[in-house]
Image 1 (spheres, rainbow, N blue to C red):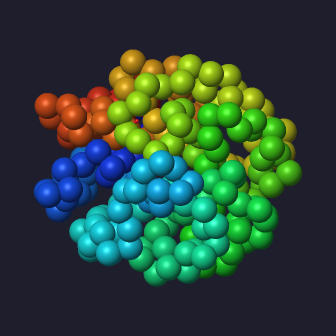
Image 2 (image 1 turned 30 degrees about the horizontal axis):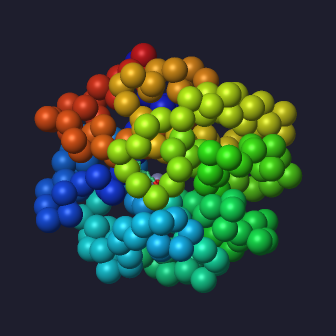
Length: 221
Ligand code: DX5
Ligand code: ZN
């Protein structure tokens, strides 16, 4: 089995009253990353959790911390998230006026730089900065909530983005976020995805650890 496709369970769907238990489940699972969704109630119509909770989470995590900021003007908090232990920091394309500068600031703070794009955002808009982007977090639902249905147009966007990455000799990873299940995982990696985020599908299953293992197997066979 090759092992280059990554699974990133989203903590948003965890049991917040049993966070340490759910984190340790991920630590001992086949998952590769922790996906952490930070929402401000302005960029998206929901608020998730903030710095004190992330600080408590990273006390227990033993894997890469992949932070997805769904906040306006994310430049304000780049150093804060670096200090909190983020390894990858993704900002939304739609929330950045000077994206190139933001990406340099994220790298300057010692993190990998990610750009998240909403379902309506054309991937071609990333072409001029693609070599500066370590990860594109492609939203396959409208950001703000877990448990939504996957948007089918995503497959087409993955193929378009992959072409841009290859044409520019970039090493950008493609992450798919929203509505990922065992029904679409294989098709997503075949289209060119490298990392699959899964929230509800993992945590609402009877046996989350086995569900992670299954996703890992489906995507790496
Ligand atoms: C949505 C978040 C996702 C969410 C995915 O705004 O960015 O990471 O947790 O949840 P599921 O897998 O339930 O769609
Ligand atoms: Zn996310």
